[in-house]
Amino acid sequence: MGLVDKYFVRNGKFWIDGLGLEGLLAKQPTPCYAYSAGVIRQKYEALKQHLPGFDVFYSFKANPNLAIAKMMLSLGAGADVSSLGEIKAAYKVGYKPENMVLVGPAKTEEELRYAMGNGVAAVIAESPYEVSLIDRLAARLNKSARVMLRINTLEQPAAPEIMVGGPSKFGIDEELVVEAIRALELKHAKLVGIHTYAASQVLDAGIIGQHLTYVADLALKLAREIGFELQCVDFGGGFGVPYADEAELDLTKVAAAAAEARARVLGAHPGCRLVFEVGRYLVAESGIFLTRVTRIKSSRGRTFIMTDAGMNHFSRPVLMRVNHPVRLLNRIAEPPAGVFDIGGPICTPLDTSGTAVPLPAPELGDVVGFFVAGAYGYSMSMVNFMSLGWPAEILVDAGKASLVRKPHPAEDCFEDQPLR
Image 1 (tube, helix red, strand yellow):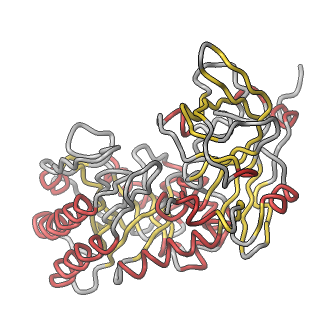
Image 2 (cartoon, helix red, strand yellow; image 1 turned 120 degrees about the vertical axis):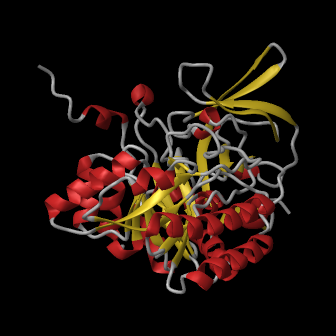
């Protein structure tokens, strides 16, 4: 059974957490995003079940909607934040500073001061310069700042979106970190751990397992050679979700490797906190982007479906060059009648959200659903492109749909631009 049928089909009709298509569209017409609270809970509970002894920090960048962030908090998640806006959003919904880490390769002094001034669990430093900067800013604040070192490891994972192993804007090169950090004279920055993030969208449990072992050993080595008490190891995340016909990530295999890594670290540092930062895995499969067919045309042997929104509201298929699962929601049980290209109203050939997509023969007014849209959907999109307004976001929980982000009509795009 595929993702769509597993979560979003009941008795041959579209269904999202107890609500049908008519009920959903009565709350908000297209274009819009809809998220299933039930799917999010299932994904979070699966992680916690398989990863005992690890804290899960929700990566706000995946989907910073405040309602979803608050739901993650209620489930027990901490917060992985990457900007001043995300820090303030986390505080707004109630995250405690001791359950927040600030990451990012080019943090501003304002972000650092705000995070340290509010006592976040740690600032993740990406370079020796940043460690020194944190030390100076902490002195001005008359505070002791907890710092974790992000390491650009020597790993070479065979995975998409690799973030280690070569030249990188992320982290301190593993082979240089000991010498570079020991050369610093730190008075207010306290080293408490390390952070790594090897790759994103990993579906191979073996790759994740190798990473966990590598990082556990590296954390012990660096704490010993640099000379600090190891209080936290952030293993990153990168847990993938299937967008096409890939197999799901086997959490059982990840669990075995995680247990071994946990034993390695805690055997030497019993009080050390172990963290995973997870975004996509928790929210991607919960989300659907809904848009409506406005035109159908044939051109030189191909049939194009045009919809009321495209890359302006859902940029990920274009930016990442990936076909998301697509179905006609009002005819979700009908078999395909052919393959179709799907595009929106944006005046560029790049605006193609799906290529050669198998669907029933489309009709004007059909509702197109792009699945696995809960992560890097709204948050990655260029919502101001062509001044078409911003889409709504809806959270559905046990049959009740709540508008968790209001739509903004086109005229709102010009609100703060007075004529002179």
